[in-house]
Image (cartoon, rainbow, N blue to C red; front, side):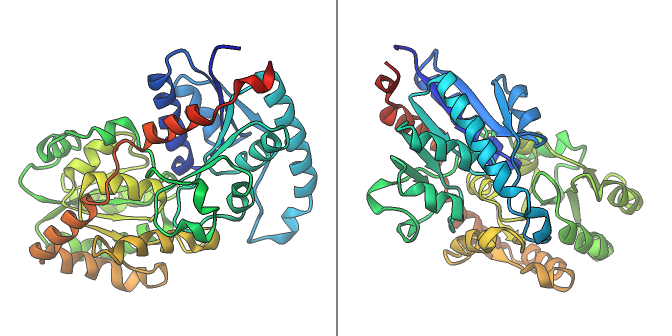
Length: 370
């Protein structure tokens, strides 16, 4: 069997999907003609986003562990067993040389099935604190690609490769000027600009804090690009109406290269993808980690940068009282902004997608199916 065939499994949020897609494109650049199959969870956003990128995807009937309502987990063992059987069928039919897991619901059953069938697996662990599924899978994986130091706490040291987290090519090759970014959002070229972004679904607490502090912020000579997510979009639009031309509210920003280019200061959740992008953008950032992330990994992610003087952190529990004051203090401290921007830029890795893709092709074993 001469053609390269690779399965990429996972999804659930933009933070898992965008890296998966970036690795898919890199595989096809490094090895033209590589056949790819993505495996996601039915009803999750990968089922829509992955085909938009031109890739084929199949969905498993799988959900994650529900931490907030234990009773909802009653059917989970059955779904896990069923999804593992489905995953075995998918692998048998597609006959991949390797299977890549990027995290998210579908990642575990597919990699678990592949390991049981002696198909080489690679884990792309995006966070500084590994999740339970990846820790289990890491024992038998051929390689684990990471973006943070000291990951040998979670994975066999000899299997770890520092690759960084893949980002969308529009950001990896970002060349937009601040003027272009501001023009894109209909903002003034010569006014200090704050970008507020809460991940692909928005961030309720951050939105509420910006809403409450908007009048204070607007007393400064600033303008705002505010990505709210769907639930808060209408409320934010109403709130911003008094500041037409100075506050741009968007439910979701697809063109993040323009958004980062427009910004002088960023307020963001601390998902692994957001951090990878912000390192490349090289902008001072205040992180508000999502407090309910598994193993509180967003706080862990953010602290890796805070400890290098490359970012600031406001805990979610203090967001209402401390976020806007922290932003205003940073706006008035040009030296601190420059220092943070220089330090965060040192952490950028622009070719993570190709580093991971090269390792996937290296471990792939097509003779398994001959």
